[in-house]
Length: 113
Length: 115
Image (cartoon, rainbow over all chains, first blue to last red):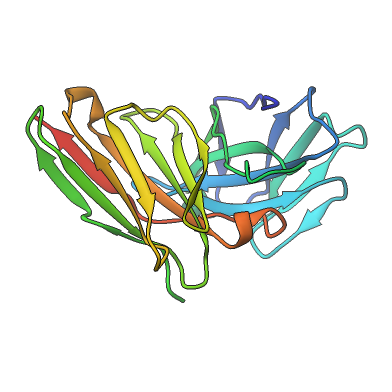
C-alpha cells in the first residue's frame, strides 16, 4: 500500500479553522484518499474521502493537490469535540476485494478552548 | 440508525485461556473487518470477510481464527492467550466492500485484558 506522512501532532483554538496536511508522494491512479478520525476510547470514524477533486461534506472539506501527491483536511471551525487522532489513508480500489483500511501514524489534534 | 454492535465490551482472561469476540454489522452490510489496537498504537488490520468468505488477511496470529456467519455476524476466536493480546479489538462493517461509498463503520470495540 502507498504510504502517507502526517505531522505527529497539531494544535488549534476553538472556532478557528484547522488544516491537517498529508503527503502521499507515491500515490497511484487507483488510490482514493480517505480520512478517518478516532476520538478517545472510541472506534475510528469516517470523515471524508476523494479521488481527484476537492470534496465537501457536513464534517469537513478535502483539498487535493493537482498532482495528488498531497492533500489537506480542513475543519472549518474546530470544536472541542474535534480533538482526536486524524488518519489519512490511501485505499486502492483497483480490483479484488482488498478494500481494507491500513492505518498509519495519524495526527493528534488538540483543540484549545 | 443502527450501528455496529460488538460484544462483550470488556473481557478479562488469564494467559493460555480462550476468548471469543462477536460483531454484528449494520443491517444489509455484507463485509466485516477486524482490527486490533494495542495501548498507544494505531489500529492494525487482522482479517476481513465479504459475503461470508475471507476476503483479506493481515497480521492475524495463527492462534486467532474468525468467520462470518449466514446472518453476516462475525466472531473472532482467540486461543492460548498471551499478555500481548491485551488490546482493543474493533469490528467494522461496510456494504459491497465499501469500494465506492468509501465508508467503513466501526463499532465501539471490545477491550480484552489478559492477566
